[in-house]
Image (tube, rainbow, N blue to C red; front, side):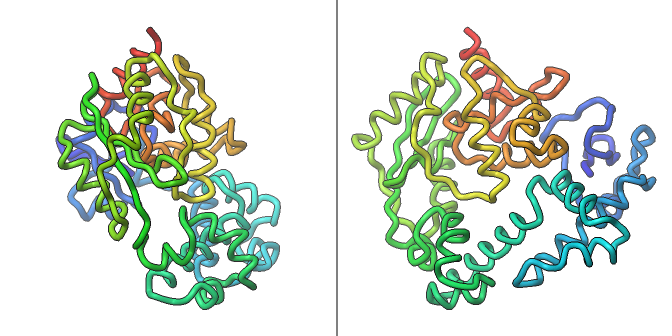
Length: 324
């Protein structure tokens, strides 16, 4: 659900009401939360009235909660029967709503537990066991790849990981780019370099972050050209952390040619999850590597820009430069 502060109304996602400014919008998981915050239900989309589809969404949410509390893949057929669905229907509905399969979701949960165990100081083997991986081999094959760095380094909160950064002044504002030895890990846009640097430090709290204008000169040059529509920075190597679904979305975005756009629905189709449109939008919003992972090339079906983490003015300017 989303609510508009200026009107005091909350709506379902996709409501046909006039779109509000992003600064006036806040989000809620349920109608109850919105009502408790002082909002009333929209009379157009009726978010307070249940729908048949909501029953299957509730079932998927229940499955998620079950998967988050177990170490092994459950008997999906038995779970589906308990919830009143066939196994095939439950699997398909889960993929539609969440954007990944049940088995992928379980692996993602295992990886998240491994993160927490490593953060708490557990050794790699102990973390793998606590996370539900049957062996170190399984952990390195399915869990370690989601950390964005080696398990030992992640255990130390990225301590010892060196991240270099540089910044350039461009027509869309200051662009700050940061990179590990593997590739670009952040590209941020904004009017205040200090604020961007602080955000970078917060994202990689225990890493050694140093300015490296000389070492990242070629990255800065390519980004400067990309902002003007004179180059395409999607060829830069990247080093990103994300869920399996987010990685799929980000990889798909890098295949969109400069000067072209895709709708959120088209991206969902591209990754094989045609009904995961909202999840695609969420993945775009969590993209830390602006321009290089070009989420600015994703727009709404009606042709409007939709949202953008770094500001709609920036998104519009990037699309205009690429179109020209």
